[in-house]
Image 1 (cartoon, rainbow, N blue to C red):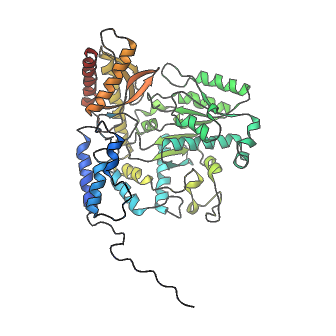
Image 2: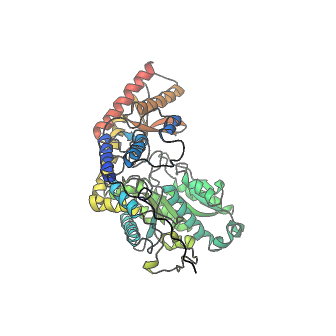
Image 3: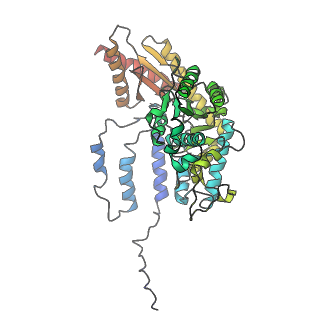
Length: 493
């Protein structure tokens, strides 16, 4: 038999080799980013999509450029048009500034290129993520045996928890027959407040339950879930044949940072045998501070907690932890076997697989940045920065309360608060609304402060979310000064 022809050898021009000066250029870019963090504009505004599109070639490049030229092309779009989340005046979203250790951990993860599906595919990265989850369970004061995994975001973590709760309530037949097999016993219902993150009602849609399966629990005067109203709604729904399966409480809502009364809700869920999930994507990081931990009393009684490390634990995207008190509940939902993954339901540690605990199969090494940060800074140091953000928010609230032209709308329970500018001269409420919208827009254009667009009681407010480890008292004072000065100018004009 004739031997098959060997393929031609690639010449050096076609070999995919690392650029010799790549690390030097990365170091230079990181230094430029570091120097920009504390001063200058947060975002170059206004920006139109049509202005950015021409900055890269219209068609996919067929022939490559020298690395230096390609790198400059990349930086020309990435650096000038990046929103600077680490800026001390970035108060727009619940968004992490990132840590100086992050680029090195992300670079290591990319260089190793591990697919963190199971122990056999990435032993070191799997062991690291499992250890990180155990550390988080310790911070949350969950019992030994708790588990979980890292996901791309809090929305995915909330959905994974809600799906786990659904299957536990509906029973194993739902895995074979779907909703039609269990719907005859009554519609399954999910509970949260109007302030709950939109991923919670959306989870009802994604799970096939429909939006009407999400039941809105009334709030108290602080926009927190009302336990008595929850109790009454559960009783009403049960009397009408509905089957409650999960209550989602918030440990720090997106709009105001409100913390639902977790301990009272936990007791209600325990009595009604309902899964208790806490969306702590933002606020669970308060557990890093011993001084703030009491504000989250009852968090340890949850069945599951979402904890976004890329929010208030300061890490760069993306690492959202879902911590489960009993990880077997998730394995009951996501366990899958195939000829190419013949893993038993109760595997030895060497056959552990994350895809048996969540919806993703291919996964990058998300734990590396968190483990490096905790090894280098320690949980206490991160916790002191979390606590400092809260003190900054409370300082801002005090300045607002003592200023005759400012009105506190939502006091901070953590590091988010909402206020309005109100002129001393009488003005129509609609005009005050417009004034506050213009103040927010003008602050963004100036580039020194970035506030997000938020409405409470259908009125625009100036919402401040303090999550940067670079924010100091002088930035809080400057914000108050700029809001008042701009408000006066707009009111007079």
